[in-house]
Every structure is written in C-alpha cells, then in structure tokens.
Image 1 (cartoon, one colour):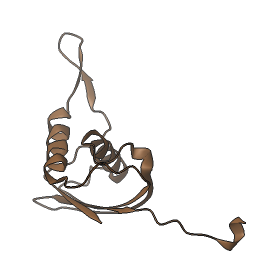
Image 2: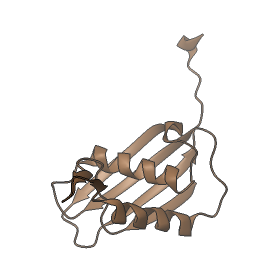
Image 3: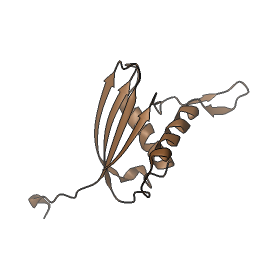
Image 4: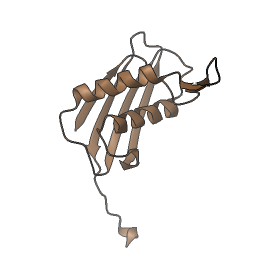
Length: 123
C-alpha cells in the first residue's frame, strides 16, 4: 500500500478556466494544482504504477461548497501528472469519504494493487 498526504485546499475541476482581461483563457486554479503535484512528487518513493489499482480517498474540506466527485477528478489528474500512475483509467475501484468544516484540511490517499476476484457466474 502506498500512502500520500496532501495538505491544504483541493480545488475542483469545475469552472477552472476563465477569460482574462484581454480575451485570453487561463486556468485560475493552476497554482493549487501545481502545489498538489509537488507534494505528490516529494512523497513518491516507488516507480510509476502500471497495473490496475484501488484508491482510498479521505478528503477534508473547509466548505460545504466543494463537490466530492470534482475533487476526486482533480486528485486523479494530479496523480497522473506527478507520474504516480500512468493513466487515471487504471483506477478501477474507489472508496471515498469527505468531511466538511475542517479548519486545516488534510487529504489522505492510499493506493493498492487491484485484486482480481473470480465469480462463479462469470464462467
């Protein structure tokens, strides 16, 4: 099992691009995303995972306005950009928990290799 801890705010992928003053598009949440990627890279101890995985997310947020699924999407993309995993399609099982109203939020992510289960009805 591989464990990562992300401190501070996790932005959602929703409404991340905006039109600037001169008509240019820019990503408003890129500084927060870059900080998450740096935290992942600093905690990475193993080579990039290439097989299917199960991921356990324990998310803490300050505000009720944040949506769990958008946060998970952002974290999966950050795992890919930090080269923890090759592609976020490798995530075949997710267990997620969110807690709101935390003054200093911390997100804990645990990654395990996916265990293949056999079912008698699959034959």
